[in-house]
Image: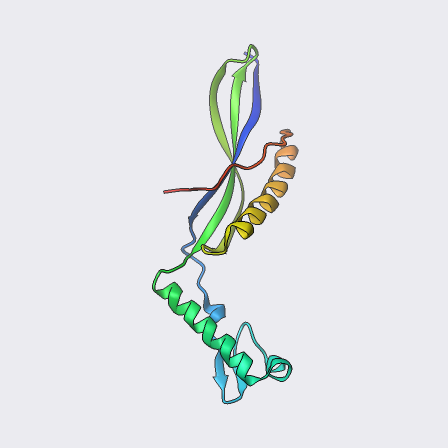
Length: 148
């Protein structure tokens, strides 16, 4: 039996990222100097001033505490191609999924523009991967859906 395979949808699927933590938001100050930090350096104190850097550190600490109180979380964004299998006469006989690229560590409150851009970039990468498997598609990704 001859069958055809066609990508009918690309679905962005969202799930909780249980690995990422916002440790980058923690900065230890040593007087008027940056002690330990993944975000700031003493050059920032010189460039922007100690008051500005302390303000940023306080805002980061508040964001970290918001995360601890589950006011935001990290999520994974994964693309899935839904492929329809049809007979030579066009009768659909089923579908299967092809898992695509995943990006973790996305902040759940990053905003619609950021999410749209992320999905667009992942979809571009995924189309290249699908082409390597013999699927040429211009299907645009659907709206993101949460996975259980």
